[in-house]
Image (cartoon, rainbow, N blue to C red; front, side, top):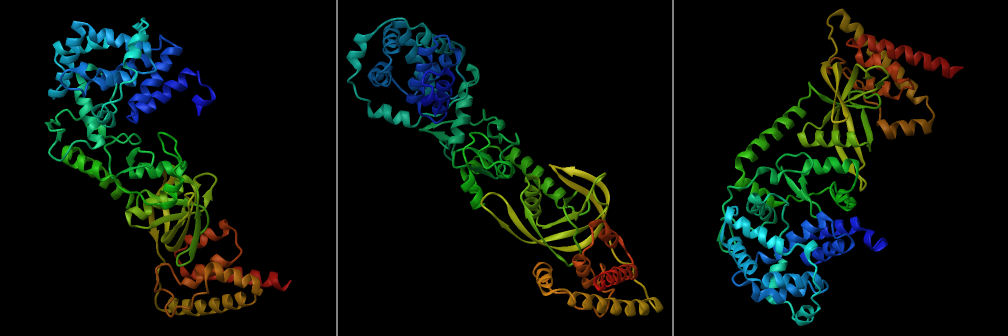
Length: 501
């Protein structure tokens, strides 16, 4: 698009050429780099890229290179100056000899070029320097313009691989690494009938560009970029585009299904077993740490939550998308819920929620159906990857016996009837809304101390009562069921008096 809007913009042409080169479209990339040199003959980047592409065109040709010069020149049809100079350079004895020696070394040698072959590479590069081409070779162009591309050259062009820009002494090893990523090496480590040693493979060549660690559960996007599964998901939490090329991945995000790149996994397992073992160990340690429900427990700072009471949530913030996904991946399916605090960030008491189901939407949002499980007290406030965490200890009611238990039963039955009467006195529309959100009022428990958190109906009534969060929080912290019942009784009496007025 940039090149169409500004055809003579050097930077746009240069970027297009680099993109085509990385896609293996050597002919189109070379044309773009030569166009860049026509705009600015002193551009070092275009000059270097054009040299590398010319070398990649020559390197697959075995035997006598001059037999295939018509095919090579066919690629350079629009560039008479380059083609003519190339003919003159290869036609000279010394350079032709160097070219043939270079091609032979490139085919037969498995390791880096020796010192004496390095001189030949340098000589060839000098012979094809784009900036030093000065002659007008229209006659040579007319001679070779009608020569069609041979089947051999077409086959070779289809198999061209992108190469790293690196020092000459490591070029051979880098080519092996890049061919590995393209899957051109078979299970026995051979390529095109030649044995290839894998001793030069650098583990960093198989690193994720997001976490800078070895690929773990690698997945490849529709645009062709590979990342760790967890790294890609975290990026899509913030932006539904490829982290590298910015191509839209909304469809991939909507499906919520990622296919692992099996070839990449097999290559890592075969050639980098030690690095893979270490990477797996780090991953398992991270999962174990995330699975701990006493230390660094994820905290959702939102609303009041109570044991046994449903708490549906709409998740749309990136940090909470990550938090919910981790809760599902670890298998705990649990996180803490606290109300906000202007000083500490979130309150000192909360409730653990358990995820019953998650429904994802195409844009990355989700609706979580959760229910309260246990109460807790915050020991230490902290954060992790953008969301809040806490070290916690769980709270349980203190049990009573004898005369205190008998009094507790009487109080329990009395407050239950009071709450039941108050709820039935509400308008039908309000009752319907409460029932659709919280469900029906739980039945009275035969033994109010059977549950460490107390009777379920108490928490249901507290969730339904129109109290501010700050007024509800003390009930969550109470360890005495008697105190909690007396508190509910006072609130219900106040609500009744207000209603009667």
